[in-house]
Image 1: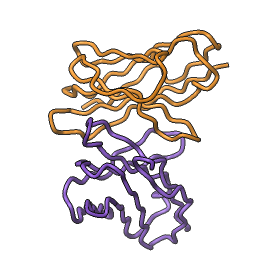
Image 2: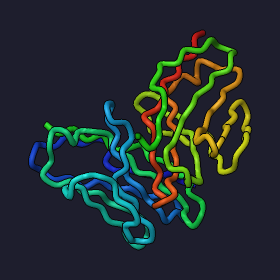
Image 3: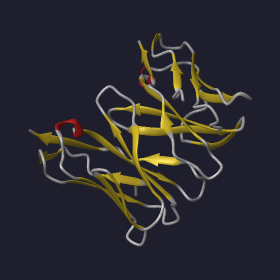
Length: 113
Length: 111
């Protein structure tokens, strides 16, 4: 069974640009969560999607948005990038429906210059 | 009060000894508890999950949950150098089912 796939693995962007990250969950999983990981703040919850609906949202500005498609694949978008957005962005998928064990992808390392 | 708290470490343990990692959480209604292991430069890997009070064992790992005291712990028996990593405690909040992580404890197994 294939794991969670995130693309791209690495990105370098300039301040003010926007970026879209992609996550393909484990087959059969309907829940996708996104996290930002930085050395100082650890893993911080961005949002969670289940069956194309955003179920939960963390305390991030509106520049961070996401969506989920009918095949459960998810995208995360960050607009007007700031230097502080440099981080490892991790996607985790779970089956949902009572099984909340989450499995992570390899992450996308975003560097904003 | 932070939702999930862990001692950042580093926790140094001799090879072959028992490593004990602790975590406390603030949401009394939390139902699901997880331990992830993260090697440097890698993504977190789920190693244990526990839903009921008491102990759950899987190989060299034992997760312990005490809901009354709102803490969860991870014991690693016969510690190996390959166990050196950051261990993340995660909890599903009762109010909205999202999984919140602690900042992790760095574990260093001394050969």
